[in-house]
Amino acid sequence: MNSTSLHDDGDPSIPLGASRRRSILPRSGRPWRFASYVDPSRRPPTVRPAALAHARHPDAAAAKIFRVPLLTPNRDSWHNDDVKGRGSARKGVRRKRAYDASGRQAAARETRARIVAAATELVKAGVRPEAISYADVGARAGVATRTVYRHFPETSDLVTAVAAATLDRLIGGRLAANRSEAAVQLAQAHEALSADPQLFRVLIDTPLRSSIDYDGFLKRLFADVLETIPARHRDAATATFEMLINPFAWEVLHSYWGLPRERITRTCLAAVQAVADRFQREPELLDPDAPLPALFRAEPTATQHDTRKDETHARSRIR
Image (cartoon, rainbow, N blue to C red; front, side):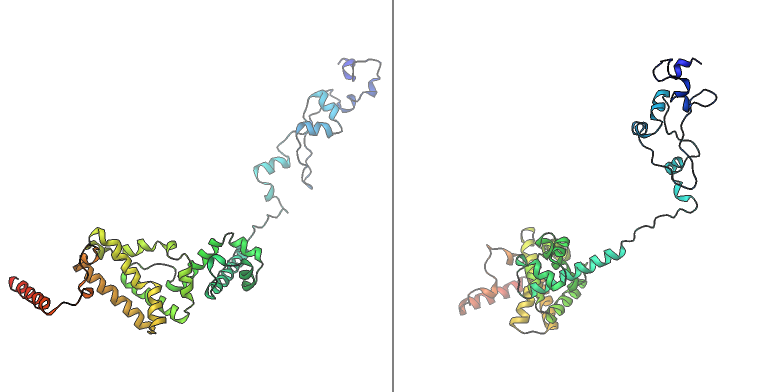
């Protein structure tokens, strides 16, 4: 081996023993390949990028000269275990327990329910939904105002939640699948309204109807009846059915006429039955260009009355 090649700058005047390169050469004269140190009692240091490792390692100059990496993976290195995911299986290493968020989620649901209940009480007390104060809601619910904002960023979100909670209280959270179930749900709603009349204000002030597609529900509920009515009159017939069973009908029968709950439900169902029967027999009653229904026409004179009687007898003879 040429001795000049062992000096920093090729100057033969530098003593061979003083060369920094000679201090890292083994007896064989070949350069070392630096490998990561394997110590079972401790985790290995984090492998740095090559440039950073060369700059900080005490033998960085030698590594640059011999062009060898300071850290090279080998099969016994902890780095290999970490990469393959076997590091957590070593003896004495405990796995990190998964975080259980069920408690926090339950607390959040409870807080949300308290906020909705507080907002419902404010609406019952006469506060318009669009004028609800989050500070008042938080004070009633026992939470900070920012907590109310965290659950319901917009007032419309809170009002919709109040409407959904009220619907769930009245009919169990789902609409009836047929008219028999609808009659049961109507009785439940009338019972709840009679027990707590302030719920009526919640029903008329919150977007309850639009949130459940009430138009489509009524058309599905009375589909067989509407099929017998001309298409141009079906919307008017459906609106009439709704008018007879909506909360305003309960308000009139309960607040103005003082009817008991069971009589209110029976009256609404009987009215729907009578209207459906009449519309199916005489759909022209819904035609605005047709004469007024007989009940609202002017009282006939004696001659008109006899003429109508003769027409009725003549019709019966022809049949």
